[in-house]
Length: 433
Image (cartoon, helix red, strand yellow):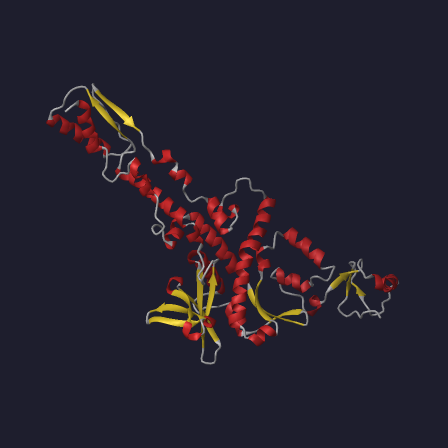
């Protein structure tokens, strides 16, 4: 047996682990489509995914939702027990914020969110009970004209519930009724990232980062070889920072093999950009601020509300309108509506400029401004619309000129009162013949 052969034997016994992947087994690092990361562990172990879901669910949770009726071109807020239930306490044990935030989070994590509409014997709604998405399965009931039902696994067994008693908020889907979760869209990348991380961790904890060949100038007896082997074992059991001391005539030749040489850890990890692209959450909301400016951030925030939050809000509104309101109530103009303006209010200067532009054209009453600013209104006087005297119709131009002349003379004819700041109270003004 030659020196090189014996040296290789020593290296094989000491440095190489049986479970260490070789170049020929690199395909084992790539996950199959059925293995890998669960939805719960993905949420717990990936900060960017948690951040994206947290941003979207908080946005849904913080928007006020109210019941309105539109009649004769006017929208009024409806004082109804369902408005209190949906907007304040949908579930007995959860506030509105927690409930709607959880609905959105479930939709993102599992692809579907469900709530059971619990009613009393008179049909009035008691609460909206959240259901575990993993325990619910939609199906078409052949015994009921293929009506949509939901199989719900309970402690007492599986029960079938008609779709009018279940609120269902799915993510996007191509067939059937079940949505595809945000995490499923990233599943292959998540699995690959998990595998490469485990490989790197295993290599760090149980293996040497490098292997190599030791060349000996002379033959070693069995006892000397065992002693040399034990010394090497003891040295490398102390970790990577240990110093290897070689005697005269011993040459160590390193053979480099590193997972990072294949760029797996770099190219196949879940990046913030991938999470942003899949979830629709802007990069700056995931702490990626490279090249971000205030103006671009403001526009990205508006885009986030319009493209991500608004569609989900509309889905929730439509489901509530259909299953919590009767056909007659919907025909009479009743509907649930999120106040999405709560997310795009902007800074104080922007809001002030907007109000200043809307008030003179009767686009917004003073009390409406107080409402948007969460301030107490000023009573009936604040419900009267104002219009600037700088605007008029061509067919009333002559009448407008007459009003201006009378106001200069300190007289009025009761058709409109000037407020002193260039606007006119038109709430009691009669149209000219």
